[in-house]
Amino acid sequence: MFNLVKAPQLPPQLKWKYAGEPELLMWTIRARNYNTFVANCMFAFMQVLIAGGAYFVFSINASSDSLIDRVMSGLGVHVFTSLIILSMTHQRMNFAYRITQSGVEYCEWKDFPKWALKTIKWTAGITAVILIFMATIDPSFLLGALIGPGGMGLTYLAMANSKSYQAMHTEYHHHFLHWSELTKLTIAINRVMAEVRYSVPKVGSPYMTTGSLYVFFKRQEKDQVVTTLKKHLLPSTPSVTGKVDVLN
Image (cartoon, rainbow, N blue to C red; front, side, top):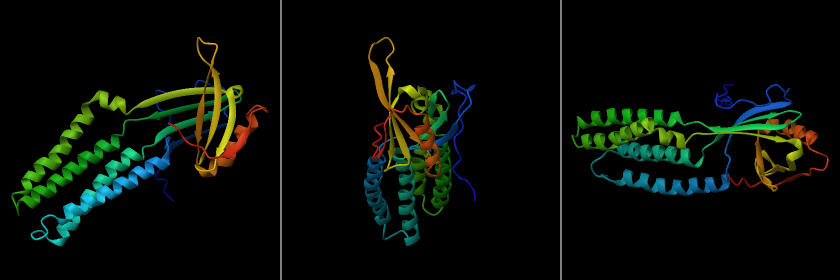
């Protein structure tokens, strides 16, 4: 069976600080590091609006256009808009985890989505060819070729040449936590993940910084990851099972 979703590789900007220490477990994964319920609700709500827009496109010029043209126009609007909304509500972050005797080292990063540029470029090109061909039948389609594909072409150029825009969609983070800094393990029942609470000394302060490490893994890797974490946590560190709300 083909593996269409390849595991992400650690980028050159991120290197394991404890690479010289033998690893007990290491894996990479793409995961949605936010509240998926809210994101799914937003996408479902937008689908209702998109369906209304697609029906509007289908309905206009009902007397002059053929049924096939109207269906293709409405379907094209629905699919293209849905893909754009999906890319915004269902983004994924890349994660790499490495467990050693010293603790848990993990990296998270989000590269600029070059696939979005290719999608816009090819969509603009294909749409322009179709509209220009249709303009041989009705010259009014030339205006559509200028506005639609032309606008997407300008969007492509702006995204491809704007370093600030690309930097805004690119992130690199690297962290390490000692086993003694982990204070609680919660194995999620609502998602394939685990939450590890931690408490680390705050630099230049007598106080501690607390937070959560979200450990994402594939369903088939759950037992191995959870067993390894439990084995190396301090005996005083509680381990429970429950619902985990990702607050990112």
